[in-house]
Amino acid sequence: MNNVQQTAYTETDAALRTRALESLLIEKGLLTTDIIDEVVQKYEQDVGPLNGAKVVARAWIDSNYKRQLLEDGTAAIAELGFGDAHGSKIVVLENTSSVHHVVVCTLCSCYPWSVLGLPPSWYKSYAYRARVVREPRAVLREFDLDLPDSVEIRVWDSNSDLRYMVLPERPAGAEDHTEEQLVALVTRDSMIGVAAIESPTE
Image 1 (spheres, rainbow, N blue to C red):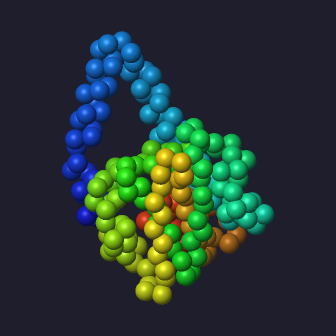
Image 2: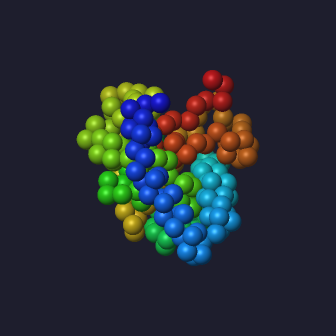
């Protein structure tokens, strides 16, 4: 576990407050455990990173879709049926061999839930929010992503109206993969920008 993730893991105040609020709402009859389980399942399984992986895979195999995705991420993502429930605009940023994008929300935890599911605890942590802006290379190394000095790193700050998603580079060795096989390669962290996608031959 890296330093950023370790810090997030030990920050339990938010989790404790969430459980206390959940218990109070259930006790008052305003919520049921079934409703809570349904919402959690929706974001962990139905609205999870798989949606984003489908968007990425489509962009990798369809140049017209990729162009549309980079020009108007919100519309292109909606075309696949993944609309943002909060009405936020989604901008998609393409990683290349010379430019690497990484996403953060410095104020809180604004995040494109419709394509990435629930945000990881480290994304919401103060350590990540503060450090990735000041020292992105160091933070990425803690995620085992050591980029050459020749690669420019751009950090993008999400907010309540504008969310960012990274289109990672298609890995070597996946040239003959089907769209379904490509979906299986894409990770949530690669769409945040803290990881690269490993070659399927590795």
